[in-house]
Image (tube, rainbow over all chains, first blue to last red):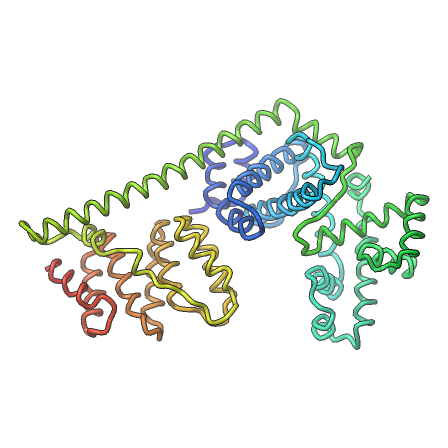
Length: 187
Length: 270
């Protein structure tokens, strides 16, 4: 049986080995499944899962934060973002981009924490938009075709939908910039 | 910022500006720091919230938040956390490897035991067997169905699930099958054979029986496989009475899967 959610985070931060093993037992298979179905291997999944746990612990010990979803959902999002980042890195590596340099695990972790915080700020602000704007942008970010968006949201034509996406995105950018965290995270 | 500028930013990020327009845009980027920051924010929001398989957030090394987290990761406490987590990782995957090895040994021993049992049964002793011995003697992966999907819905999850099942990654298999059951427009009831055994191997017998019953209750031509797997799982759990009940349902129709074997087992259980 799964233990209550708050105990996972608390146990992880405390370094409770029993809890960490339970985290692996209950949540690793889903992450492994996701990574393997997105161009990765089991080894990749093991590394990403470990890095996610390290990232969460370092961040929490430095700056306590709240998880608004379940621990499982949060951990999965962190792993998913780390894997997206890793795919980006691999893409650059394949292209032999000169920007690629050898960096320490700690440096990668620090960057990942900042990226995760930025992502959380964007995602949180998206939820603060009006329901119509929020749903429209979610559909847009999911790359739903404009024809589908026009039909679902009842717009007259593609141009109207396009203009509405523009306005909603401008609003999103505005409220992101107005948040106190923006300067700290972006500058 | 006016909508024309926003339009230009979006077009630039999507590669929609002409060569000349791109040149002018990049000139403005180099000259105007505020504008460059705005463009970066649009880029990060688009990539971060988008469904692309990757994103770029361009972390600057002089960012104070980055420096602070780097210091925390490099601190002795951070290093201890890293060591503890690595140790836990090692322990977990070592256990996984051992369990896999144990399963292999179990299969080897089971096969040997089944062969020996068969020898004894057909030669000298011919005794009645215990339930779990009957399970070992009668369960074979060859009885698992071959699946062909008639639609594309959830087909990826289905085959990944079967692959994970065949690799003995039963929890992973369950996740895939769950996705399949959610996504597919028409569920192939034979898939319940796989998810049922995946549940059985992870110790969730209740869900295993539920899946076998779904197969048995379906209109599929091979629905009686559900009865057979139901009986085998009861045998595995030494639940002889329940196993008999499922086997009796099989022997009422000679067209049912494993009709003859079911009769033999019922005779052994008497």
